[in-house]
Image (cartoon, rainbow, N blue to C red):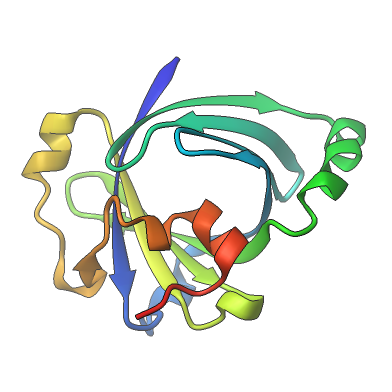
Length: 156
């Protein structure tokens, strides 16, 4: 099982220069969520994935399986009350990293979060975030996508 090493940041608003980066619209819904494991569907462009993640915080286990259109469409109705949509912008960051800046839609409109993935926990620990990334929210459950899909915007 692959590990995902990721840090997450809360931006007060989308940076004005964000539109200079590449983007893709993402729709995702959750099939199952419990204390340790989440199983989600994600569609972006022509790609459809079933993803299972275990754990919380900066380091989690992750498995992704590509689905064809028919498989995705058969499962998608099961996510009806647990969905979200966002546009993901890919922003180059110093050190060869890429920040994925998510601008949420619908009932989550106004929420802007950036995530960065790292090759190791050591790389993550050495990362000095640029000021535009805002407050670090790594591991804060109220900003986890599954929580946002279930409960809506985080309480302040």
